[in-house]
Length: 319
Ligand code: AHR
Image (cartoon, rainbow, N blue to C red; front, top):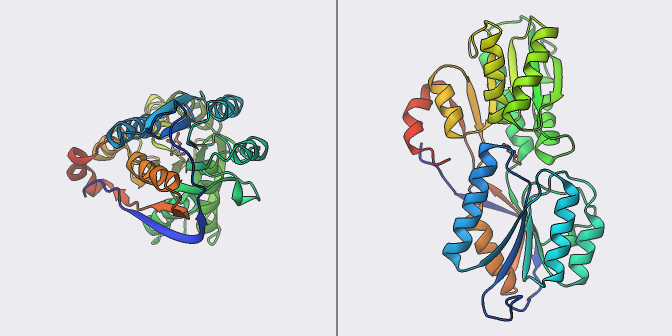
């Protein structure tokens, strides 16, 4: 299936964005300050490229800051953008909590903020104009729905190991919640091990090694992203087991590496999470600068892919 960047909008609340002047440099070009989480995964690399390419194509000046997975770096970057008087600030919050003070500073400076990819848990939703990204709870549900269907003809206990994303991040919290919501309906599903591996391949391998040392009866691995699943595959193979067979693997993202692992029979299912947010982000930035109303939540359209679709889909995966 062709990679899509169809965006569906759910206009939960319509917010009139504040019209702002153009260009911190005093020129006509719109200036967008963007604070990225880091470079922890293949998904993130694709997301960064999408934003950089889309800014160049849209004629928007991008001030890009990499926070290296640290909230304090993101807060510093946002404060710098405020001092520089950028037109719009966008960021992907590494964790969901702790943003109210800096977002209030941006609001007081009349600089609109767009959340991309990850949400914040601020009660005051006037602190940002809109959220653009995935429904992570739904991704967790989709992962669990596959498992329910794959085990529907058996009442045997299903022992699940879970590799969680960054603690306190929206995708880790929501993917756990959505998955739990579905498997919680049947007591045969048991999560026997669950720990963060910080969305990285290296940690995915390390934590899976520890899981395997403590439990020889893992039937299923649920990884909150592809990089952790791919790291875990190495640990499973080194332990003399067959990923995808001895331990079924459910992953989230849909990177080319994960599709290759599916085509090789090592991952059983991938729930897609679309990183190609750049073009839509630039479109929203322009709308906000023009003072046009923006939907409060813009959710990307995503699919679920199984092994039988992997080989055919591989050539069209763009990340
Ligand atoms: O926030 C999106 C998540 O962050 C992706 O699933 C993961 O790969 C990334 O690190």
